[in-house]
Length: 430
Image (cartoon, rainbow, N blue to C red; front, side, top):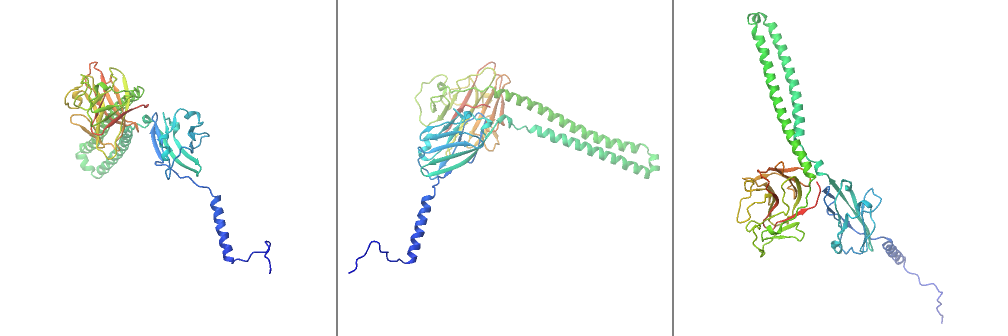
């Protein structure tokens, strides 16, 4: 009987089994040596904003997962430090120019949102930003481009283009007229040589023909000079208005709402900076200054002199009908019962209605803007008697009212809200 020793070689296995085992081991080794990746996506890769405003740069994990324990870094490309650095619930060091101006919106971290708010924007904040995330599953990043513009450097002056075009046309037309005149004179001389006997008999006809051509040329030149003078006058008026707008830009005021004037269907925020329409009637004292029928509210501040500007944002809810209006009103504007909103009744305002914008003149004036801005500066110049509405996104003028004679009466910010409407007063600089 033979015993089997532990040192004896094992029985041989088929070659294909050895090959299969080798391939499986190699695959497992490859999986173990690889590094998992975290997917970071940016819903909007290009974001625009205006100097002085706040902006939110948005990124999120895909698929969504809790990011509280992640290492999150927002970096501006080309810089040597962090715009914002978050790690395990703690905000770490950042570049000096961003201290006190950035905030990682932690309410969304549990859903995988990595949104960063930057306040008090300046032109130097423009550039490309990277959101980099590191956690136990690996590393990922996404890029967002921020473009910060100065609204008043972008104000469009159509009259400048018109002056250049008309001046060019005037010069070209004068050259053409002179050429045609010289050519006509030359032709007349050739004809006079051909019909010399006839011209000797009627010597005044050639001279009269030359004067007729010259008179026509001079009339056209005078007409073009007149058009150029009109355009120059319009340009001067526009320059004056632009100068006034620039002065108004220096007079930013922080407007708050006067809750004592608010209709009972309007809900005022605690900081008196926003108002929304509600279906529920609030039981409020029927004060003399309160609007009891029109869903209106006035600003606390009343102005009797100087220049003053404030920014208003229309908060629209997707899929719901809403309308509202904003502007200024006399302190004596009618508070009780229905009234017509118009300059004649002491109100100068713009109205939003289903994505359209119109000036509340009598009758209303439809304004053809695309897209319709949702953030507007209201600029009041009491001394000059103007109230101008400006697109807060690009600085272009929307509409200007000429105020009636006020005789020292105060003018207040004025707001009118309809179904599902909400308005917010914003802090910004022009």
